[in-house]
Amino acid sequence: MSPELPEGDLNRLVASSGIRRIHVLSWRDLEDPEAGGSEVYVHEVASRWAAAGLAVSIRTSAIPGGNETTARDGYEVVRRSGRYQVFPQAVLEELTRRQGPRDALVEVWNGVPFLSPLWARKPRIVVQHHDHGALWPIVIASPFLARAGWIFEHRLAPLCYKDTPIVTLSPSSKAELVANLGHAAEQIHVIPPGINPRYRPGGFRAEDPTVLSVGRLTAPKRLDVLLRALKVAREHRPGLRMEVVGSGPESGSLLELVKSLELATAVEFLGRIGDGDLVHAYQRARVVASASMSEGWGMTLTEGAACGTPGIATDIPGHRDAIDDGRSGLLAATDADLPNLMLEACGPRWDGLSAG
Image (cartoon, rainbow, N blue to C red):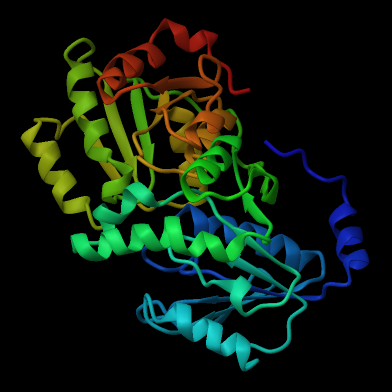
């Protein structure tokens, strides 16, 4: 975790930087039905920049039924263009200054880049949470288009970014970006995420040992793997149950899986819940679990740890830094290890785990 700057330091940095207006290019807005951790990250950073006196404008794709422009926590959001049309249209608007003047540009590279080095002057940086290589065949139905996306992300686009500073969240994600996309190690700056102070120990543990999953219900999050692991773990501890926070396109198939695994009385889907309810969910759980196949960090694991709840997760880049293996949680080398880790984290070893 990054130590917070002493009060006033960000304001002094802003005042001395000469930067007053920042444009951020991001695929989706925080209010998008498909928003995830990347959008939360952009919001948290933008709101703090705005509070420090910067004029921040974020350009994203449109959201169904949403206003084209909105203001949120001191910054402006412009939401127009289709899911993929946003990439060329946002670039065109920057070139024609439709978005107004800027002193600096931040590009969020979320699988598909805006290719800012080809058209934007410095100062500019790129935020890249993780490699999307394994996700292309999952999120793109056409094998040809999925392969084309992989080639573009891994072989073509990186050539444009050789002199561009890149920010990522974890050392393991940096290593992944260097190995898979060919970025130079010296151009990548690791800035771990902070944690909201509302996440803290307190409340009460649920009477039945509870596994908590928090996140969008999408194929890459692999909640189905956690459900199957729960089924196996309950053979040894029948009282074990699971709470699921989040919504998404896989909700229907996951409900069917719960029925087929005969877990209807052991699994509760809570949907999207408020911040206060989420804190209580972390506090009453015995373990927070993630079987995700790709993460830049794993904020749900860190939020759980801040509430005094250990985590178990797949051993992937991002997770390796979000969990201090054996201290704040446990990493699963294979999916087959997850049931035993559920039992271990909910058992006597819980007292030896730390929220550190």
